[in-house]
Image 1 (cartoon, rainbow, N blue to C red):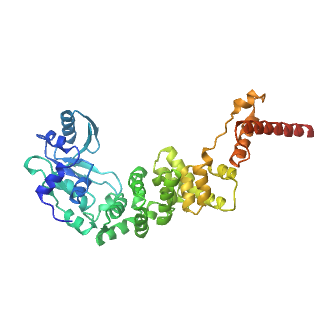
Image 2 (spheres, one colour):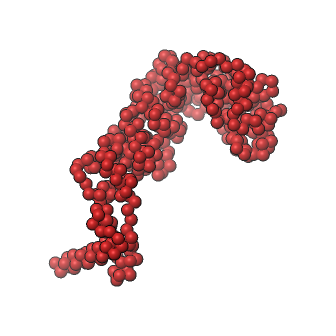
Image 3 (cartoon, helix red, strand yellow):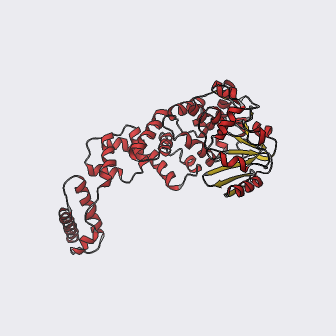
Length: 422
């Protein structure tokens, strides 16, 4: 990465989408700085869409005034003195410059107002501990007290102090994401600290939703999963999350790739693959992540059923109706995990592309109109005819209706014979 001058940075700032409206609106407010990933992206010459601002002063008051000037709305977040401004084609997150104190490992921090220098000192890694001034003549000036530019140039992820992972263990997962997404490497001291934190299982001290918010983005990008999970396993972070987890890079990557084929969620399929070795042992941990109920159920069932489906589909040649009955109750994530575990591709592809879309042309109303009394026999007959249609034994409305009526008669005769036997 070549050295970037203040003038160059100023021009890069001016190319951020929406910044031409934002800069005039900041005039007269307390000193404001662009921080976080946007600074890193600008220095790397990448397009940045996030606008995270640090305000040396009352961020919520500044946000209200900014929203008024931009004809937008503001949402305040009391705990950390932050606010979000929503304006036409523009979203801006503002936070007061602050320092933090962690009452115990993994706890949310206690915050108080501070200077920009103190605010940068509380951040996770040197490459994120930089700020670009957005006010007056200082526009474009880079504040880099911890050598962020040097580490960007060297491709290094480095914590700012030795208690970084103790204070906030979710930084372990964030470090993996930066390593893989940026193609960087932990510096030796940071890696030592990461291994120590993982060995102490400090991630178990963090609330499930915070772990979820760091872990799921790591499992979203197919091309990054293998390296990220290899590093997770090397550093012991998987067992730090839960002893039942196994960071199998190839299995998770294959499940995420298969998700595209079967219409499943990549991140949920990869998560299910992490749990597939011991789904029962990891159930409590999965509950702690506080996923939405349908997502949680899909992951749990995919982790539990994926291997069974792979085995059952591989036993021998199955009829289409058997494939349908085996796969229809399952979420698509279970199909993705089954494929990753070696299930026959042809059977699942046939289900996804054809079998699951097969519908009867008749319904229960047609059977009632033909004189069949309403009873559970109607549902049984329709299910039997659907199996026939899947296997190519009936085609068209007339054949379906005749087959359904025949099924009803057979069931009635069987019931009659059963009554006679009594």
